[in-house]
Length: 427
Image 1 (cartoon, rainbow, N blue to C red):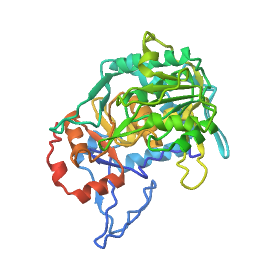
Image 2 (image 1 turned 120 degrees about the vertical axis):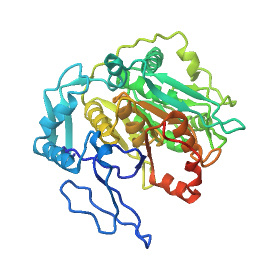
Image 3 (image 1 turned 90 degrees about the vertical axis):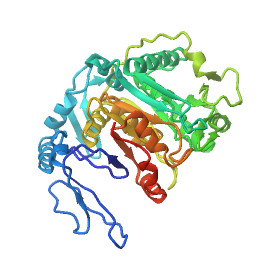
Image 4 (image 1 turned 135 degrees about the vertical axis):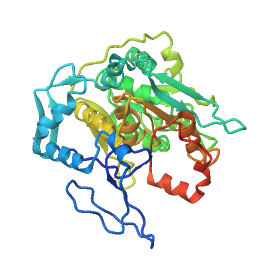
């Protein structure tokens, strides 16, 4: 547990507009050897062969953190009095009941905002609407399939009011199935709006979700279902990837042969592929949503109530379920998203991570929606139908903040600068 404020992107890169104070950006030496450096507050200058890119003065002037000195001062304040610091940060969130104690710390265990009651879904949706952002776009989604001219066949836009309505409808559908606070719900879906809606609906009810990356196998699904003691899976008939269809429902069907825990499978009709069907267990998303109310009060939840389980990949052994509780995670991801990406009300932000990973949980869904900005979601591969796809999305939707992974950057670099050069980002 670390109580101080520490900002850093350890495994991903922001490119494009990064509106914050002076930053040290590592670069390769002439001999192509990777150099590392420390970004600790108060640290010395980096290795002399590391390039330092200071932002223009007018660029830094409008940032939340304008200078390295401001960052150092804020960091030191967070270390000197963590309770006061995080109490001030948490004051920006909505709590049904205020905390009795900011931090209860008994190494290695930490409890944040002890005695408080809140709800992540409420902070992502209801609170944003209460602050006047009901008609502001919350999600711009683009599907992978394209026309013969390379234009996307599907684009969907959801305002904060529309996202709240869909979330409430699905939360009510879950309640009709008997899902309530404490029940664990497994989610195995493509990158479609229904994935975010499902997460927000679970959070609204206090039903912890376990999102599984859509590239994982039937055995991986069964292992996680068994460990989480989950009786419901939300999936899709399939998802598009590099022009093909990932057989998600088929994988779920195989997983259900490996465990007897699953009683309900909710299926989004995404591709129209013919899928296997088990009567009494399988139900279509559009059928369970039919006739449900667009109003569903958010459940006041204890600060330490489990928000979600997220399992490690299992590449080094048995997958481990990491439990994230509600209030501490909620406050942390809102504030780190605001400062790391220097979020402003009219930003159109895009994190290319899959929601199946923690980066997607934090910086596609929960951290971004709490800041009331517009969030871009894309279903498919970065090189479909060609290597211009990411850049065309940025141009088409007016992306102002773009967050992606070093592996993606290296792949783009190998393809050459002509692909991004084809597009205009000035808008």
